[in-house]
Length: 49
Image (cartoon, rainbow, N blue to C red; front, side, top):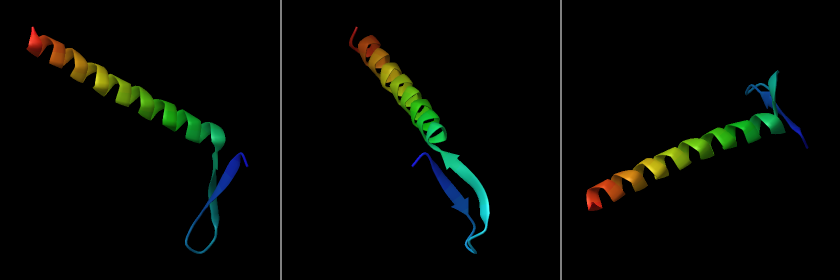
């Protein structure tokens, strides 16, 4: 399934979430996590020096 409906509590359709939307969000989150990890690693290296 490539699309999921977004509905209100009453079952009214308010939008669709696509697989591309989900993958884009996951990629963004992974980039942010990688940045945090890299910053931490650099900070740790500087503290050890």
